[in-house]
Amino acid sequence: MQNIIVTGISLDDFLLVLEKAIEKKINEKLESFKPEEPTKYLDRKEVAKLLKVSLVTISAWTKEGRLTSYRIGKLVRFRSDEVEAALIKRRFRWRDN
Image (cartoon, rainbow, N blue to C red):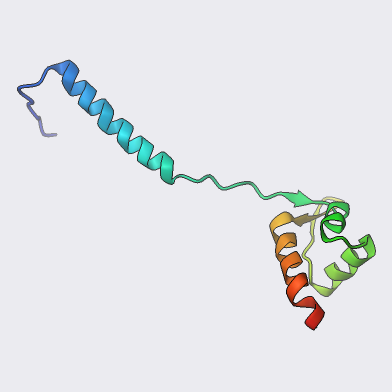
């Protein structure tokens, strides 16, 4: 390890400069840090309400592959981001098929 000798500055001033440098680096990292939001899952009724369709339509679209469902035990859930993507696709493309 290399020793560094600092002269011409008091220990308090040196610690203050060091503290400000560390604080600046931490703030830079915090500004660029964007935590990933947890995936939200919706049940069939929530999806039907969001897409303004019936539960039968949700079942049909799941069987056709237009929506992807996930089983969690006995529960059926849909990822909210995938449902939103399906909503956009439905508005612009499903009528063409």
